[in-house]
Amino acid sequence: MGPLAGIRVADFTWVWAGPHATLQLAHLGAEVIRVEALQRPCVTRLLPPWPDGIPGANRSGYFNQFNQGKRSIVLDLKTPEGVDLARRLVACSDVAAENFAAGVMDRLGLGWEVLRALNPRLVMIALSGYGAYGPEHEFVSYGPAQVPLSGMSSLTGYRGWPPMHVGISYGDPNGGIHGAFAVLAALWHRERTGEGQYIDLSQWETTMAVLPEGIMDAVMNGVAPERNGNRDRWMAPHGIFRAAGDERWIALAVRDDDEWRRFAAAIGAPELAGDARFATLAARKANEDALEDLVTAWTAARSPDETTALLQRVGIAAFPALSNRDICEDAHLRERGFFVELEHPEVGVRRHLGIPWRMSETPCAVERPAPCVGEATDYVLGEILGLDTATCDDLRARGIVA
Figure 1: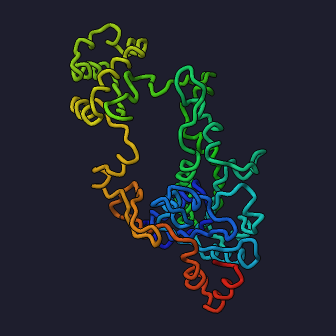
Figure 2: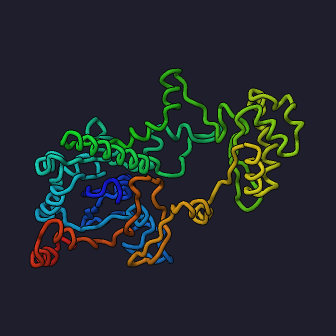
Figure 3: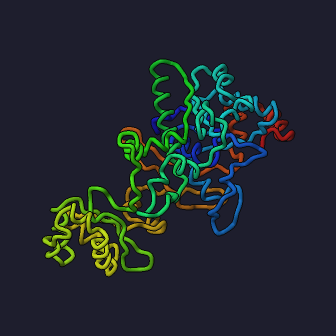
C-alpha cells in the first residue's frame, strides 16, 4: 500500500496540469475519483495517439497515460442534483482538485467557501493559469502560453536566432508536479493540526520558478542571457552532435581541461590537447565553432552507442539522444520495472510510463489502468455516497449521472 492509502481525492481537473498532479497522488496510493462533466468530456479523451488508429473516448493514449490508477464518475454539473452529488463526494474526501480558470468552480457552486463548510478538514487545490486573484486572474490559460510568458522562450534558441518554443507545454506537467507537492505539504499540515486549507497555484509562477539563472541575471545584472543553443558557459564541447545513422545524435559534455585531454586521446587525436585553440576552456569557448566542427566530424562517423561506450570508459559524460521507440525498448528502464502493462477494457494490454520513484518502506504500484467514461459511477453512488439502487437508476434515467 502506498503512503496515501486511505486518502480520497475528488478530482475535477482536466487536460494535463491537473490530471498530472492527481496522477502523482494516485501513484502514492490515494483513491482518485475523476468527476467528469456530462456535456464536456475531457479534451484529452478526444486526442491521439489512438491504439491501432481507432479513435474513441476510452482509447486515447494521452488520457490513458495521465489517468492511470484513477476512477471515473460522470455528473451533469449544470443541474442542482449533479452539483449536490459532487458536494457530497467532496464532503467525504480529503482533497479536492481543479484546474479551471479562476472563478469557474464558484459559478458551479463548488467553490472553496462552500466546500470548506461541508468539510473543514478539506485540502483544496486550484491549479489555474494565473492564480485566484490579480488583474489577470480570469484569463483562460493554456500550457503552450506559459512557455513564452515565463521567459523560457527568450532563453531558448540558437545564437542570433529569435526565441523558440521548448517543444512541449512545459507549464502543464511542471504545474502538476508543483501541485502534487503542495497537496502533500497541506496533508502533512493537516495531520499535525487538523486544519484543511486552500492552495492557490499559478502555473505561470511555477514555470518561472524553474528559471532562476535567467531571471536572476536580469534582476542582479540588468541583462538578458544570450540564447546559445546547447552550449554551456562553463563547459566545451557541450551539446548534441550528429552521429552515424538516420537522425541519430549523441549528447556529450567535457567539463574541464583534464577531461579535454582525455577526450582528445579517446578520439585518437592527443595533439589537440596542446593545440592553442583548444587547450583551455577560454580558448575552446573562443573557438567553439571550429571545436564543434571537429567533434561532429568524429561523432558523425560512429553510432551513438559506440561513442557512448568509448567516452564513458574514460570518464566523459556521453549518452545517445533517445527516440520514443528507444525509450520504450530501453533495457535499464525495463529492469527497473518503470513500464506498466495492465489490461484495459477497450484497448487491451498497452505499455505506459509508470511510477518514477521507489520507496523502500511504502512501495507504490499502478493498481489499475485509466478509467473508461463513468466506470465507477455506481461504485461512487452506492458504496461511497450510500445511495440505493432505485435512486441510482432514477439519477441515470434523468441524465444526472452516466
